[in-house]
Image (cartoon, rainbow, N blue to C red; front, side, top):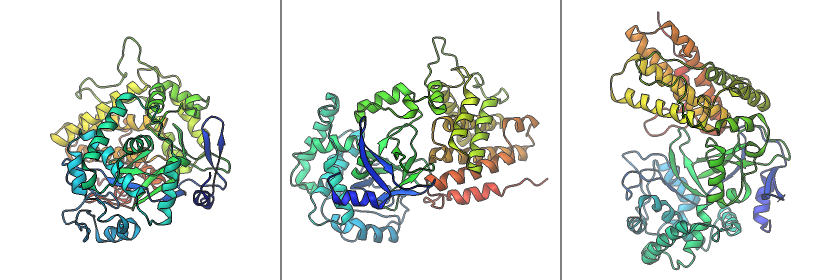
Length: 497
């Protein structure tokens, strides 16, 4: 790359950027990274928290994106930026807000957003924020790096479909109408900014849960790391920093990759979306290789056929006794053993293929997964809204284990989403066992379904091992226990006879 500052940062983090005949460039490791190691850590060019139901009201901390408590500090200068704590307020000021404060009227941005449909408002906020940040004269070194990386990104404006460009033109029109109120001198490049950010932004998620918490524009990470449907790295947003971590042991010469989209989607859907949004054809091993994971991906991408059969064990009602296919428990046991003993990825992937390789599409495919996900969500809704039978609780556990088995088959084993599903399944099984113990309705057959205290503890410890790699299990959101605390409670449970 032409930038000395970017090259210095890349080398400092044990990375090297080289040319690639297919991808154009690739970033490889020049030192070994262990699973859970930080590969790269940098503040985004611009970021903002996700909004609540009322678009004009911030519901998350401007610094860490945590949900705001009832008593919330505000910036004493602009009186608009809100925080979850004095510590976040102080850290945000010293890291970036000192040069952002008073440069843009957030209320004017809110007013501009109200002229657009809700789905377009984040794009307007990102565009305005990026344009404002790029106009600052004196900035810290990390922001100089991000701004240099921004100029190296490609707009792909000529490749955007016309309906997207029409949406961008409408957003640009609103920005131009309000530009003086929101603190922008010029809006001439708004569409280019929208094109560039639209295919390079990131979504941030809570460090102790799978809920979206905010939006990031981090050009350096976009510039350096290519996509893979089965990546060896993922990022967590913590305290204003985008932290890229290794999901597996990375050897010298290995390319560092992130997932730009959900790797659970069928292969043809992924390919179409990557081409339409990011303007490239994916050639990762999962899409084009012959590995065990690539073969599992072929199985997941199968259509159900003209008969459209439902999964074999899917309940038509919750009166029938719960049942589970043996492959589900075997896949979960492979995941638990892998995250307990730290075995090789080859052995893990081959074990998954051995479990699902002979299953028909009705039992193992993306369509089958969606049926079990809907079953899980339906059971959880019933449990939360009414007094339910032990059968409904048992079916909730069974469907959660199906979802976990599908996750294990399609995602990297140490991805945070897998860990959170482990934790939720553990809590479901424990609550079901407690409810059944209290009502003396615990059938002996439930052990065969994997509904046991031993399963509760193993799932909880597995969640802990995964989330120590790809999340922040010691962090607690407002009103919630941290993952570490939840695991400690689940692992210490017992029944008194």
